[in-house]
Image 1 (cartoon, rainbow, N blue to C red):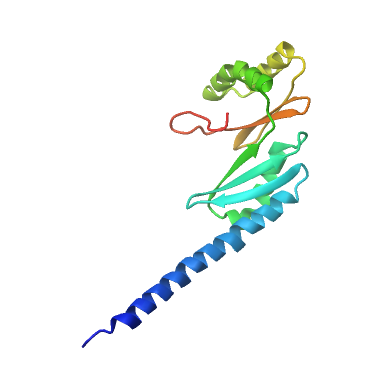
Image 2: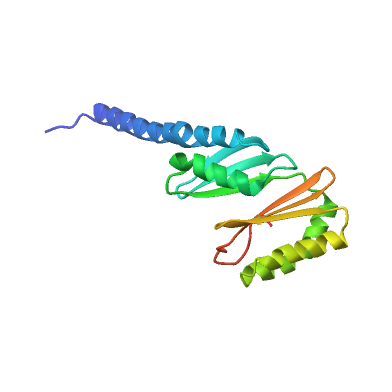
Length: 177
């Protein structure tokens, strides 16, 4: 039996195109667009862009300065559950921080990291209270749920959002702090 290589090659190329095209279409129309729609409908979200990988879904957000980050996470998790499936949801927030706000955050970072490491989450609120006493122009808001600790620092038009996972990474480093 003699194989004809041209029909075999065409069949292989068409099969690969169909397979990867279907995978791309599912990701685009079954995961990314539904999550973008859910996130954009939440109050405080100015824009949302979804990126997915094999094990996680990353939602890049631009939030208004008065956005409730914990509520945004909760609603995306609940309303986008079908699109997220068994993947991990990761939020990345674009904020409009400034050097003074970053400097203030760096002063509080050690206390926050220690509280997270020892799982004494109430000390985070204490650290934020001390920060607002040291820097009176800064407003600090902290919230927590079963997954993350959320911190919002605000000074005038500048705002910094921080999401700290309650289950730290192997290295104990927070990529967005």
